[in-house]
Each structure stands twice: as C-alpha cells, then as structure tokens.
Image (cartoon, rainbow, N blue to C red):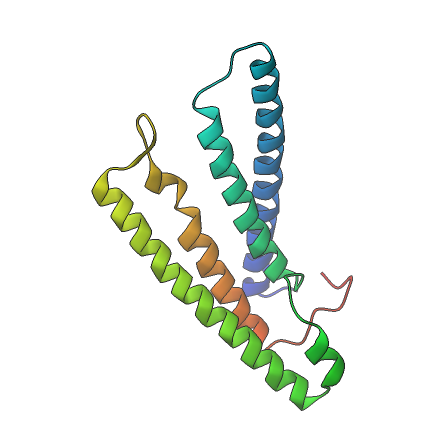
Length: 161
C-alpha cells in the first residue's frame, strides 16, 4: 500500500500533467485561431499577450515535470566517470546547488510580483501582470523541492515511473 506522501506526489504529478496538456493544447489552438484571424485581416488584440503567458506557463510546468522524472538538462560526464559513493556525493552537490539556485529564483520572483502589484502594471486592460507571474514562485518552489529530494535519492531508472 502506498504511503500518504506517495499518493500526494502521485496526485500532484497527475495535476501537473493535465495542466501541461491543457495549456499546451490551448496554446496550439489559440495560436492557430490567431493566425487564421490575421489571414482574414482580423485578430484578437488580447490574444498575443495571453499566448506569451501560456508559453511561459507551459515551459515552467514542463521544467517541473522534467525535474520530477529526472529528465531535466544535465551533464552526464560525472555519471560516466564516478560510481558508488562518489557519484552519490556528486549528485548531492549538483542537486543541492540546483535547489539553492531555484530558491534564489523563488525569492526573486516573489519580489517581481510585489513590484508589479505595487506599480499596477497591466498585462492587458484590466488584467494585472502579476497574475501571469504567479507561475514563477510556484514553479521555482516545486523545482527547489524536487531538487532537494533528488539530491538524496537514487537516479530514476528508465520505466520505473
């Protein structure tokens, strides 16, 4: 029987996967719609800012999913040269560093949201810019958490998740 933590992680993974799929599908469909409307000398003014936001959201959620599955960009040189305890130490250092960088980015993104909230910057008409930026601290927080967990976990073997 799965532990509560494993079930929660599975539920979060499912939500992430669905969110990525829905947002990517919306990105493709809305981009196609905008192209078709422009060919007809029309277009939706608000759609371009929305599409830019969707690209950022899909990219960051994709990064979070990649970190979950150990599929993020990494240098495999260390993995080929080191084995056993030395590899575990190297992984702990690399993932620990990635977690620290993600935490720094989390803090910076919270600062960006504060600045945009206070300045009243609008993405489009009545849509505040900081709404679109909410993905930043969420994604960097999840990345930091995943990297911290990975720092002390064995590598994921292909097909195990």
